[in-house]
Length: 183
Image (cartoon, rainbow, N blue to C red; front, top):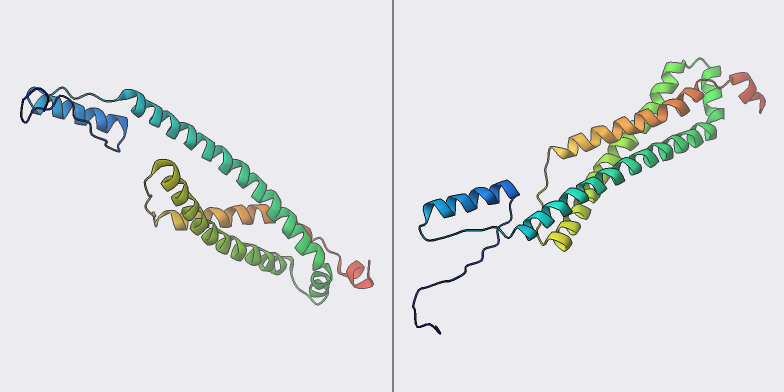
């Protein structure tokens, strides 16, 4: 307006949410297809966003590994307590002829069922948490990926099963005579 020229733009800024490679492709395409236009990336923003995302992914991976290890310890501790509480029941079942494999199957079934429900609950709560972080930090929402639900549930069940092996194995070491005697 001040120069008296109409339909003349000196600078035009556009915000596009994409990876660095895609943005570079857009810049090349715009520069090549429109004469007189020199498209440029605001590299500081793009590079810093990419760096933040990389560091955030590493942090989430580290937290996931720590939480997984703590979960395994908690599951093992809980199953040990369950086996200890049910020693009399285990001893009685063994005294009337229950096999070690039937006791293992019972406890493993219980732990797998808990792992199944824990995996579903963890998937739902994890998605809600990730959605909140994405909205608050990056001002964009994420989409739910249905294929992650069965993967998460299977991993949860595997972690639960592995963590329960030693406590369940100790259930088979129960001596019925000693338990029924009250020792």
